[in-house]
Image (cartoon, rainbow, N blue to C red; front, side):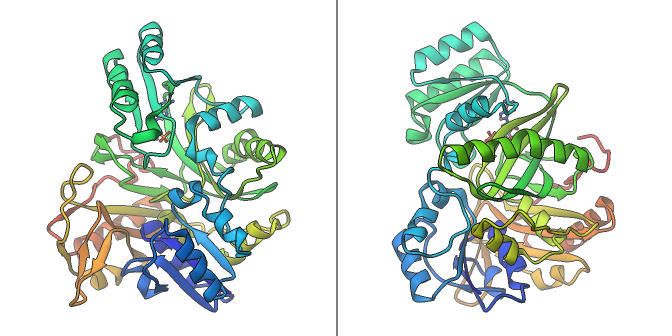
Length: 426
Ligand code: AMP
């Protein structure tokens, strides 16, 4: 198979790493990729939103399967663009990607399909939203309806914080049109878990669960980020609970989408809150999580490529995948100043020595190679140091040993990834 992965982050490096091990693979490309991905795929300098160039490349190179990593091209319709050119693409259509593209769309679908989720209300008018906050009272969660790189969610402990969020999203439009309407939700309490399901339109195959660490600082402090680390499996989400969530959340969503004539194909990611009243959906995403994917792929024993092909073909009914019975962890190394203002351009050394630690995989997220071949940081989240082991402690020890070998004074990471699984308080 000739395969094209779209994206340039750690998630796409993990996907390319897994796909590159497939005996079915003839050649792997990644657009635009990064220097780490270049070790397992040929990188082509095409941006993830340049649909006409991506389609032309796929046609010229007779691509058998396109695998988009990030949400932005999916929500903008990359699967439809490929489909129009008769190129197989394993991802949801633009309409099905509304599950991530619009918070209100998902909340309405939850109500229609009986999926447990936080109580919610949608507002197109800022004053009506503020009035609702004054009437209901904090704590409340204010979300811009549209796609805004995961940052447009404010968990407001006070009325003033909620009103400030409405002012910023709806009046100042700090997230642009994504804030034209907002969803205001009941604030759920509990532990968060991410569940992934590979879907073919009608059938869903559980594809691993993981726990992410959203805050930049140790002990879950400081601003929210795209995620500072993840681990899998998660002791607080045993298999029986996963089965129950497949039945109560994933399958009803899939059935509702199919009934509406917009079947969902690809990876459906359910962000869950384990509340005292049972598991509730926080949100759907329409692709793998980053960094959860980096923690999941090293546990996947089966070949990823036929699983993705079966999802595209609508053939998951009798498909199964096996997972290695190991603990896996991904620790994010970020550039100093992340998330507000990450410093760019610093040189990273020692990556080969780090990767030589047994059971360690060093994935690139925000790196570039300079003219002399030196690896430099060009993003906020720059590296993902992943490790497996017989238990979380062993996996974590291996990951931090590898991090100790990376010579990058301008980078930092959290030292407490996996604390929940180790029973250590924040
Ligand atoms: P989202 O982009 O919807 O995943 O929200 C980002 C983060 O905000 C989630 O991972 C949760 O930590 C938090 N969050 C979102 N919705 C709620 C809610 N209804 N109650 C409590 N926390 C929430």
